[in-house]
Structures are given as C-alpha cells and as structure tokens.
Image (tube, rainbow over all chains, first blue to last red; front, side, top):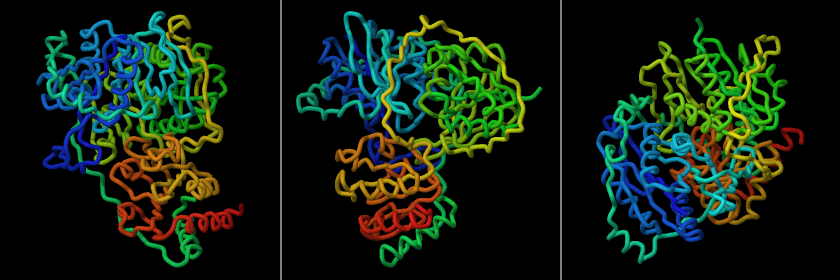
Length: 262
Length: 325
C-alpha cells in the first residue's frame, strides 16, 4: 500500500495575524498545518496496517522543509518538497494541478491523503480538485476509513456531512480528505526527531513534474487577491449585566428580545 | 442579454439546504436571469419553491443516479450544462457538497473557484467577493482574472439573508438528463448514520456553547437546557471537546466549525484566538464567565460575570417564562 500525504506549512494557529503594508504577518512560528496532522497520522496508520510506504509531499518555499520534517518525525518514510519560484501565486486549483502531477510522479499510489483545509487560505478546494485531476475516487470529509481491501483495491469510508455520516465504498486509488475526528495524531518520537533531522528531503521543480508553465503561478491562476486586511473591530465595549443571577437573566432577556435575536 | 446567474440547489432527502436559498437571494441582488439547478431523485416538486425563492428558471435532473449527492455524477452534469449554456457566474452554498461540486467542476471547466464568500458583487460582469482567510482573522478581497470563463463562487452559510418566498413568482421548469450512467460512477453510497435531533451548527440561528468552565460532561446539562429552550444548537470549545466531555461535531473554532448565528452564548469559554476565529461573526455574542478578564468579553456585546451553573438555569427559567414554554 503506497500512501502519499499532501501537507502545507502555515502560521501557528495561536499566532496573532496582522497586515503590514499589504503583507500578512504573524507573531509565532510556522508549523505543519494543524488539519494536516490528522492526514499524516492516517497515512502512517495505513502504512503500519497494510505495509508499504508513506510519502509526505509539500508545495511551498524552502522553509517548508520544517513541516516535512515533522511528517518524517511522526513516521513518514520519505518527504518531498515541491519548491519553485514559478509556482509562486498559484491559487487552489493551480496548486491542485501541481500536486496531482507530483502524486503521479511518486507513482503507484493507492491513497492520497489531505487535511480538510489549510488554516491560512481556508479554501478547502485542493483535495477535491486533486481527485478530479487524477480521476480518483473523491472521498473528502472522511471521518473513518472503515476498511481497505488491498487485494481487491477497494475502500469503505465514513464521510461526515452536515446531515450526519455517510457510508461509501469506492475503488482505489482514492483521494481521502480527512477531518479532525478521524484519529488522534501522535507526537513525534525521540527517534523520529533524530531521523527527521538527518532526513534527505528531495526538492522537485515544476519542470521535474512536466508542469505546463501556463497553468501554474499567478499567470496560471484564475483567482486574484487584490487586498487583504484585518476584520473591522466589533463595535462598542461589552455591556455587563449585574445583580443576582435572576436579575442578570431578566436584564439579558430584555436586551436580547430588543435585539430581535430571540 | 441578461447575465446568466446559476445557483446550485442542494437538497438532502427532499429538503433544500438553507444555504442554497441564501444563494438564490444573493443571485437576485446581482441583477440578471437566475437559474436554479436542482438535481436528485423525486425532486421535481421542489422546483416551485426554488422559483418562489428567486429563480426565473429551474433545470431539473431527476434520476436514481442523482439520489445522493455524489460529486462525480453532479459535477459531470453541471459541467455539461455549463458548457452548453455558458453561465457567467455560478453560486452554491459553501457546504461540504457545494465546495466539492464547485472545486471539481472548476477543474473540468478550467475556471476559477472562490470558496466561502461573505460578500459578492458583479462589476462589469466580473465577480468581486470578500472572503475570510486565516481562520477568520483577516478578510480578503478576491476577484477573477479576465477570461470569459464561468466564475464559480461558494457562499458561506448565513452570510447572506434568506429570501422570503413569493408564491406569486413564476418561472420555467426544464428537465435535463443525467450526464453519467450509474456504472460510470465510482463511489457507492451504502448508508447514512444520522444522530436524532442533530441541529446543524452552520445553519443554527442560536448557539449556546460550553467550554472548560462547565467542568465535565454533566456540566453540559445547563448548556443543553438553555439551547433547547431557545430552539438552538449546542456548541463547545476545543478544550471541552479535547477533554472528551462532548463530541467533536459540536466544536466551534479554528479546528472546528465556523458559525455565524444571530445569537451566540459562550458559557465558561475564555475565548482563545482559535475559538474567536470560529464565532466572531455572530450577530450578538453573550459571554458568561467567572473571570472578568477573560478575552471573550472583548468580543461580546453582553456579559454576565459569575457562575454559569447559576446564571444559565436562571436564563433558561427566564426564557421559558418569556417564550411561554
């Protein structure tokens, strides 16, 4: 069973995010995108259960090697960084195009795993777009891989939707988009961290993937982001309601009824 | 010729998703002819409701292969229709189905897709949208590069008002055939596991959430009582979910659900950056917390400093009285 997990490096979820001169800044380090931890854990579990190899793939700058090292420290066998200035400015669909090519280059992949979305761009489009590009079974929002039959090349999974959980089967290869409930990601072990420190992370360029230059980077992206800015501050300070619990409750009820939210 | 605006009408077991009706309302404000795309099995009767909520035309595909939302079948049909009719703009709710459908269709159409818009307008035929990024800590203005391609946009649930139905509206209903035969669809749906009485947090008008301050699984009792009295849904902070007091499905915040109810009551929740990211676009926020310094009071409009185990039951009793329950 060959598994690929696609990850992104993002600012830490606890970071204060600000905008300075049109550039997004943050006051904490870069980490493995929190949603991707579940995908990495699931990749390692699949490998442990079915044998084979788990490869982490990341599109990003040279610094994103740190996120890949986290994947290796958790238990991935290999890590590959796709780094190329021509890819700068790629939107979700251009990113998916590049990742689909990279998954094909890895070769003989049975399952490609993804986190639900990245906590910076927040589009959640990449997993489905990769599935569509590859023509693989699109199992997004997967909360449980119930069964994989490696011989028959089939998968049974539970997907979490707004209405509840959906039980589906499909043929491999599949794209599995994970959600948080799927597992409890492990912490990197001491041995894992040592292994990651020495890991040789391959770097692929757009040309290595045979990517069409017209389909990547800003030129190959349909979506433009003319400006980015902080949320307007919420108006006014909090109004504290005092008195006994009953008095405070009565005052609050008056307010909420006047606000027409009840 | 009027701008062609298409809206994907998502339905589950014959009930139209509120986000689809909101998208119809948003389409109506943009000026143009609005077409609803209604796919499913036995869904023809819903077409009139789609018209009443703002469509001029409904394309109905009624087939067993479309009974469940499966992105392969739905995207194939959407793409086929879009190639035939060349809509300028396609809208859907940013639900799991809407996001998957538009992400897949955009690949086939070599078009762009904007996810999760909270504001949208058309300027010279080009979409200009606003969407939250960095887990709702920032907003971005987003638009499409020129190109005459369809523009696909999903709209965040509850970010746009739901239009009032007008039973007097008229429109045309046209049947269309599915694009894929059943044996060409790889994914088979076996079953659904649906919790009874589950309220979708994304669609909820009122949410009462509990955090670390509730102290344990039983501590959610008063939270649940208040939510039920108000006809709302129950939410939770990550701390409460990680402690195992309540299932993840209830988690509001950066690695949970993003919600925007009319009323959000946070009980025993300190209000971390990550929690705020998931709820700060709520219309009215109420904080109940022992600690007057808790960050939640910075985003709340109303606050009660005190013991949630006294204040929530008092609120429940007060609302039962006021609502005549």
